[in-house]
Image (cartoon, rainbow, N blue to C red; front, side, top):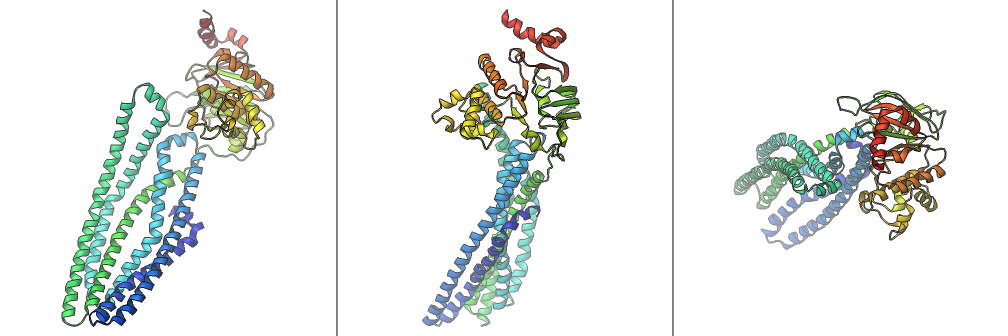
Amino acid sequence: MKLARYLRPYLLFALLTPLTMIGEVLVDLLQPKLLSQIVDDGVLPQNMEVIIHTGIIMLLTIIIGGACGVGSSAFSGMASQGFARDLRNDVFDKVMRLSFQQTDRFTTGSLVTRLTADITAIQQLVDFSLRMLVRNLMFLIGGVFMMMQLNVRFGLVIAISLPIEVLIVVVIMKFANPLYTIVAGRLDNVNSVMQENVTGARVVKAYVREEHETERFDGANGALMTANLKVMKLVALLQPLLMIIMNAAVIMVIYIGGLQVEAADLKVGEVMAAVTYVTQILHGIMMLSMMFQSISRASASAKRLNEVLETEPAVADGAGADCTEKGTVEFRNVTFRYPRSGGRPVLSGIDLKIHSGESLAILGATGSGKSSLVNLIPRFYDAVEGEVYVDGENVRNYKLDELRSRIGVVLQKSELFSATAAENIAWGDKNADKAQITAAAEIAQADEFISAMPDGYDTRIAEKGASLSGGQKQRMSIARAVLKRPEILIFDDSTSALDLRTEATLRQRLRESLAGTTVITIAQRIASVKDCDRIAVLDHGRLVGCAPHDELMKTCEVYQDIYRSQVKGGEG
């Protein structure tokens, strides 16, 4: 019911669907009555005039009913498909606004399932409800009314068979409902394994783990099959049991009708009509039972979708910032640990001021907290303790779009999209023209290889940049950030795939074209950053030094160890 609001824009179609369905059902309810007239007043007395006249009426009503049925299907499709589209858009928008810790909690596979299979299940329920609910309820009520018009004794058949069918449906659905939630969870697992193996295909092949991953997928897929089979076995009992009751009811109608015909209280055609009506009534119950299955499945899906829609982003907009500086970053006694992780914090007591236009490098061993530190600047995560300031304002006060518009980030893992080279770079500025895109690519040392592609900047890049080398992907990602021309530019170990000569040329061009931009660089190689204004050295999440290269060589033992392991070893 919480999702019913997505049907409001399509309320007209939602109302026209049952109205046109009523027309179709009325025609269907009228047919047995007309058929009984043909048999009793036309066939038995051999009156061709009655047969032809009543047959024409049947034909005309069937045409009207068919038109109503087509209209009902069309209106229902417009309402249910529009409902699904709007719901899918909102869920996707919510997923895009969740913080990293929340998307990690849901898992990628689960979010994919919710956006596809779960929304489809609810869309099918909406379509089924608008058409089949009205249809089968009318068959139930109208059929009973029409049968009672023929003979009151037929009500006894309905009074016995109807409660038995309802009881069977209720009992089976009671046991089936919890299983649909289990099926959805198993489908999440299948999607997660699939997603991991598609994105990590190179690692799987490099370590010859195809057989292991196939077995892991088979395990998840087998668990999904087992859960589905439990539901199917349970639901498989439903239709045969209902059919037995329906056929028994038909036999009772024929028996009672036969007695009434023998006593001259009923005509043969009326008995035939009664058989048709009881079939329509009990078939309506069967179809309603199928709807209960859809409700059970959609109920589990709706809970999962509402879980996403009702999740408030852990990192939310602030009231708005009133900046007094430009291009500055400051960490004040910052401590950070990743959500739901125990043990020692990733960062502890960080105090660091980065000045406007400064070139600052961050160096440290693997796991020392370098990426975690810069992730706090655009608020990918929030500090557990302490405060982070950008342009003299606490980052928690900014609206997220406002904060992130000031910052350009080139991530450690280059992310490209299934689009042209120009479109990938234009993520930095959607209003950029071709000249600006080309200029950014030249600064990032990407113009040469892009121009050599078959269609130049209009060449389509494969998903996740699979058609490019690691260095090419990094340079396109850098071009994207350069095009943005941010106040603060962060390189998160994003030149690791470049040779030193290309990297040196890149940094020279950056200094020339982005003068005044604050540049923060995470790097593993001292040779890449020793010319920066200052180098911040992290060790086990603590800041152990921050000074120019020459000063650190005198004062920071950790930096000296890194230098000796890289530079001295290389010279030797």
